[in-house]
Image 1 (tube, rainbow, N blue to C red):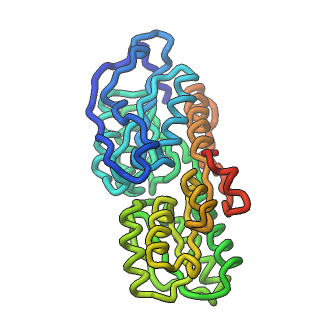
Image 2 (cartoon, helix red, strand yellow):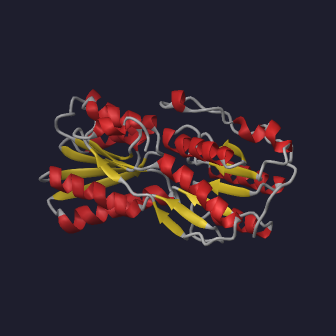
Length: 329
């Protein structure tokens, strides 16, 4: 279904205010849903792309949002970017998407906080003729156009291989994101299967949710350290959690004992690797994802075939190559 707007709607909505977090300095203004661009009245504007991230308090999600905005505006679209304060706030994300549906935007791009809850709003958008494009995290169903992002299961396997090749034996714990988070669930699954199947001397003894947050990861890690003082490995399904785990491990004086691997490849995680605070991460490419989403929207609007899934790839980052990842790919 093609949908172009000749005159842009000026209806406004109130987006969530940013909460303070460890990555606050990288977080831009989230009030795009409350603004009507002056260009929206121009006949040169193709339409409005609404981007609803998982959260505006994580630099990974901020980065693909910025990339979509930059590429979309260059292609002639108005681009609105918003998201909840926390990845666990499923209801807020759904509410933002529903408001964009009511506004009648041209396309919606989102990374689902919950792969199940997102299905209903995808169907709502489709009923209104609004195409939905998924980035980073997929959906359990619904007529979305495409998923563009990392093969998170394969990325988890890559993390498992790195741990298996660098740790001979010992106990391992996992910091997962949150229930319903498609991306972190697949990362943990890939990691766990590789460790269990190929490296039996490494024992996964516990897993817990840390909500992709630094402070929560510190708390969960402190509990793990108390329960398993001989711990050797911590796998974190995102870099915020890896940074939080690193801080807890350092505070306990166990940095030399424990290997920490994250996931995302955010620049502050690369710096943490350089500084010896964590050991590795699996780098995604959010800037690339953002550009590819805009390309997919243009192809869709032009009636061209759009691949249902696009893997943007990922890489292992260690001290050997961390300097290369001090900027997002």
